[in-house]
Image 1 (cartoon, rainbow, N blue to C red):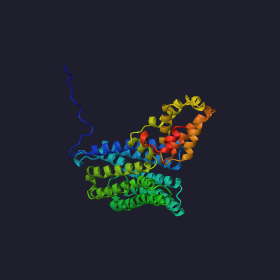
Image 2 (cartoon, rainbow, N blue to C red):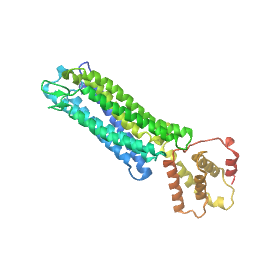
Image 3 (spheres, one colour):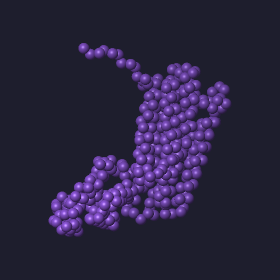
Image 4 (cartoon, one colour):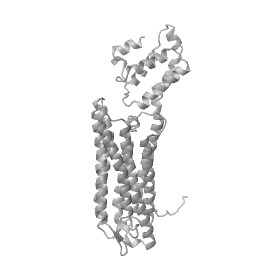
Length: 391
């Protein structure tokens, strides 16, 4: 006999008079994605450089402000954000206004920190033209000043009670929508500049056209952020057109778009640094596949004595060498491969030599961004590769 237990009502039901669940769902999902992406970026930076860089600290700052925004907007939903005016009492309205006020202030330092992270990342690449570096430093200073100014404007746009959603019988506000236009225009222009400058920088770098296009695309994906900011500005026009008592219900659309723009700004700031992780994930390659070269090296070390004594080389060892050769790709530096082969064939190669070769191979995989992995049938291998396998 089954247990007949009535289900409890949902915590945040969605109805015509209550739409706060949309804001809650968007905020929680986006902060989880942003947090995982930032953690992946920081882990990759530490494994590569053994320390955090300036752009990493800017990302950490952006994530912390984003987390504060998420907590504040979720608390606002708890106290009635998205509810109709008839479903709110005076106490709930006051608590809602306080948390919504805090959320709107925390948006701007988070977005400014994301802009600083992108600018610092491009500066760390050392652009080949000095004017590009000067422009990036100018955007860096503009982002800091913009974040402080936007937070100040939002914090003191109404008075004497600063936490109200709009003008009341005892509180007056500046033209809030005009203030948002000024803030968002600077936001959109600076983000577009951060998309264009890396593409111009790559035009002066001597790399293949494919690599130039790929790096420009990673930075260019940030164009999604100003697009979302423009949509947010459009939704705010409808929000500010309503009287203050109806704004808790009308704040849902603008809050959802603000949350998307905020977290997208953070996500796109991480994309150029985690491109290799995304490429490996998209092609189905995991870290275990990358470490297979080490396993092949250990397996082939047992056959060193026979190979050096003139014994015929087994087909398995030839296959190991051909696989190791393919891991460097056709366009890889020949010196790296030759040093790797010499480390394997050195009869006096002690543990220190093996460790050094492993460390060099790891650095090549982690730091080099143009490594390709190709697999070909033996029948299609060029003569140079087949002659090498007979040695």
